[in-house]
Image 1: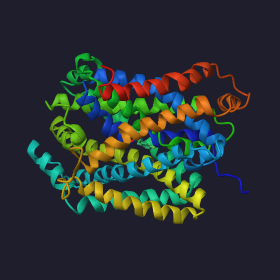
Image 2 (image 1 turned 90 degrees about the vertical axis):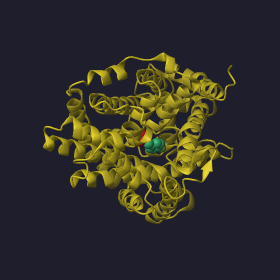
Image 3 (image 1 turned 135 degrees about the vertical axis):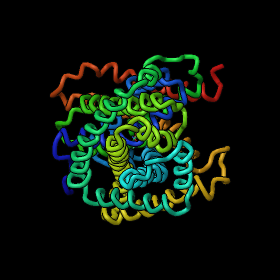
Length: 453
Ligand code: PFF
C-alpha cells in the first residue's frame, strides 16, 4: 500500500486548517449575524460556543482523521467497521458538497467586487446606487455565474495539484497576506472619526436581544466558521504527520479564526457607524454597505478609498478560496478513496456537481426567487439547512463517536501523540465530548423549537 501523503510541516498543517476555517464565515457571515443579533451579546455567545463546543469537537475530528488516515467519508468505516457510523461520514461529504454550491456563489461575488473596485466602479455613487448595483449584479441570470465558474476553476486547479503542492502551498501564501490586510484595514477603520459607536456596538452586550434563535445562530456560526461538523478538518487531519500536536493545532486554528472574525467586525462596524449606516443590513452588508463606507469615510483621500476597497475584496477572495479548497477536498478525497477515481477525475466530478448546485443557488436570488422552501429561497434554505442543522448534527455525532465509541486508548493516544506529550486538558476534553457537547447541542435545538418552555 502506498504511503499516505501528508503536509510538509506542522506549520503547513496549521496554515491549511486555518485556511479552511478563516473564510467568508468570518468576514461576510460573522459581521451580519452579529449585526442582526445584538452585536456584543451575540459575540459572547459565539465565543462560548467556540471554546465549549468548537475546540473539543475540532480535536475529536482531528482524532478521527489522523487515526483512520482516511477522508471523512471513509474514516468512520475504518474506525468502526460494519456499523452505521459510516453514515455520519457520508453526511459530512453531502454537507460539504451542498455548502460549496452556495459558498462559491458568494466567493464569486468577491471577484466581481475586486473588478469593480479596480475599475473605479464605486466612485461617485449615492447610497441607493450601491443597493441597485448589488441587486442588479446578484440577480443577474448570467454575470454571477461567470465568477462562480472562475472560483470553481481556481479551486479545482489547487485541489488537483494535491495536498502538499496545492493546498499547503496556497494556504502558506494566502494566509499571511490575509492577516496583513485584515490588520491594516481594521486600523484604518478604527481611526475614522465617530468610530466609537461601532466599537461600542461590538463591545457592550445588549442581552435583551438574546432570544432562542440567537443561541442557534451563535452555535451555527461557530460550527460554520471553524469548519466543523462535516469532516473537513478530519479530512485535513488525515494528512497530519505523527508529530502534529492536535490540541495545539486546534487552539491555534480557533484563535486565528476568532481573531479574524473580531477584526472583521472592527473593520466593518466602526466604519459603518462612522458614516451613519445601520449594521443590520444582513447578508448584503459587505457588498452594499462597505463600498459606500469606504467612499464616504475616505472622501477626502480618493487614493485611500481606492486602495482600501481593492484590498478588502482581495482579502475576502483569498479567505474564500482557501475555504472552497477545503470543501472541495472533502468530496474529491471521498470519490478518490472510496471509488478509486484518480484525483483529477474525482475533482472533475465534484467541480461539475458544484457548478450545478452553484447555478441553482445563484439563480435562486434572481430568476428563481419565487421558488421557496419553508418561506426561504433555495440559497437561504441551503444556508439554513447546512449551517444551522447539518453542521451541529455532524459535530454532535463526531463528539459522541470519539467520546463513547472508539477505544479510550486511541482517544488519549491521539492527543498525547502516544505518550510523548503531556496533555493535561484531556479529562476536561473527554468530559465535554461525552456530556456537554451532545447535551448542549440537543438543548439548543430544543430551545429553538420552543420545547424547553
Ligand atoms: N469555515 C469557512 C468559513 O468560515 O468561511 C466555511 C467552511 C469551510 C465551512 C469548510 C465548513 C467547512 F467544512
